[in-house]
Image 1 (tube, rainbow, N blue to C red):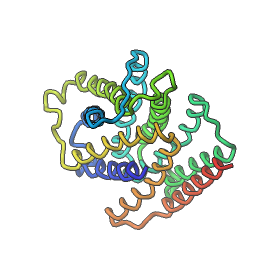
Image 2: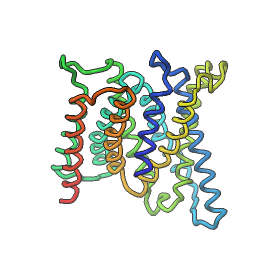
Image 3: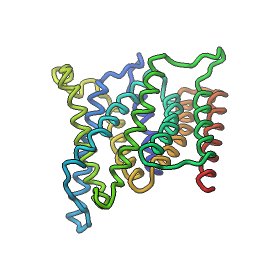
Image 4: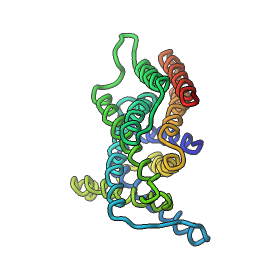
Length: 296
């Protein structure tokens, strides 16, 4: 969880810094998402083979049904990764991290419907308080939401797509005694990222522009760093989903909001806006209520 916190914050900041002076990405964001999936697939293969070579017990079983089941969460992650870059471009890194917490609400609903996970009434109230805190951060002096309508449409799409991918991944990674529960997490990741590579390759081949101009045309230093950081962040998410659950992942996302907001203000030499302070307070209170509800 500590690693994921660092990687998520760093990935958001570097992705923002990779934009040009017009706040546009000088590279094809679809290529970045495709390359991330490729890097995670290669890393998972290296971790699996290295562990087995060193005598580690890494169980690998094959099931065509289970293998194809990883295609849906892979598609969700691919769409979510592209939405993330576009949201940062439209709304900025601080706003992205704040609105990203809306996934906690949709995650709670999906965990209840897909995984049968029951939440207490106090936990549901905490999730709605989190929603209020996220919206508060976006209210300006003229009582208008900040950013473009397009940016907020992407937020809504990203909220449900990313949450769906996480919940489906948790279900597959945990599995059952008869459905790959004891399989190596590296082997499970390889199946997930294989489909991620396929999803990423389709739009690249379909458009053809990146193939003609060069896949990595426009990639700058910050783009390469964000690629590496976000790739390792994706691996960290898999470990959290397999050995903890989606709510722990959401806790880290909420904490990263505070860290990114502070870093962004320091970079821009701005004073922390009151709306951000109020939002952080509400989100922190929501986290406290949620953990209290879990203990009761």
